[in-house]
Amino acid sequence: MITAKNIVHHELIGLQVEVVSSSNKSHIGAKGVVTDETRQTLTIDTGNGEKSFAKDQCVFRFRIPAGPGTISGESPSRHYM
Image 1 (tube, rainbow, N blue to C red):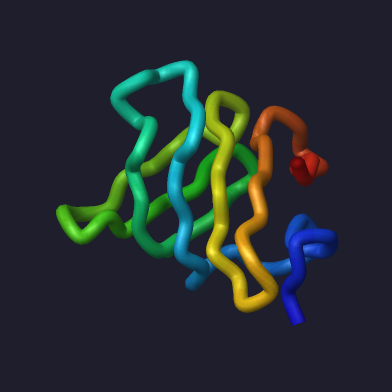
Image 2: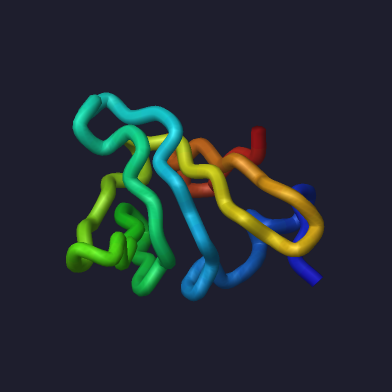
């Protein structure tokens, strides 16, 4: 089961996500379902098409069954906050 403590070790594809902070202010508030993940990006289906977000420039909040979890993408290890 995905929890806030172990989310960094799980597959993110299929999870609901929202961009809560970004160096690109136009990305803040973007939300949808993760459709792809690479080492450097998350691709989100926003309902108006898919958009890719650089992990090192964003903080993401995921909706998981155990409650919300927020991840800073600035490190490859994906620090949980």
